[in-house]
Image (cartoon, rainbow, N blue to C red; front, side):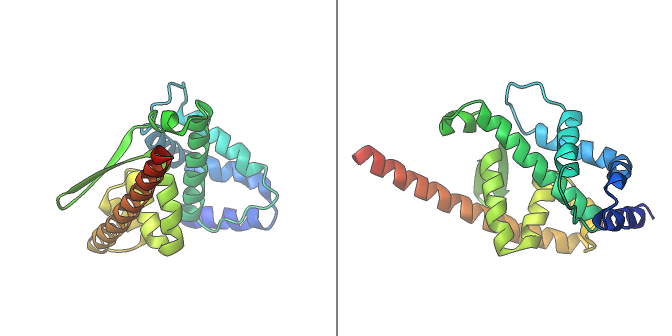
Length: 199
């Protein structure tokens, strides 16, 4: 019932009734703060930043847009999660213009598959999710729910209306892809580093 109400409100907002954004935010505020909390918990920026601050900053950014085209609760929360991620990355980058330094301020995500264990930082995850979204939107979505929202497979299955077994199968495929892309990126970075050293 709540999801249907959110969809109706978003349809009205899309039609121009932007003042209803306050009601959508109020209805989903617990979800929004939880998403913000999980994203902030992955950082170690040395900054005092709270889920409330991130949620409010993203609200301001969204409310200042000329048009808002978000069709349902899932779409709305996905949009905010990406907005939060960009905001947090800006915070990391603002601490230093040196790439190596600001990458060192992030905690890592550890993905384990078979005998492989790959650690990825917050900024690398963001770059890889953008690449994966262009390849397979569903892979990107499930990786985001699991890595950034910290949802269980059961919770993800409820959100995307698939069985828990289907979600786990897609997750394994998505992890294989993100690990392959990560290794490819690191190989290129190593090659670039070797070229700089030889010059």
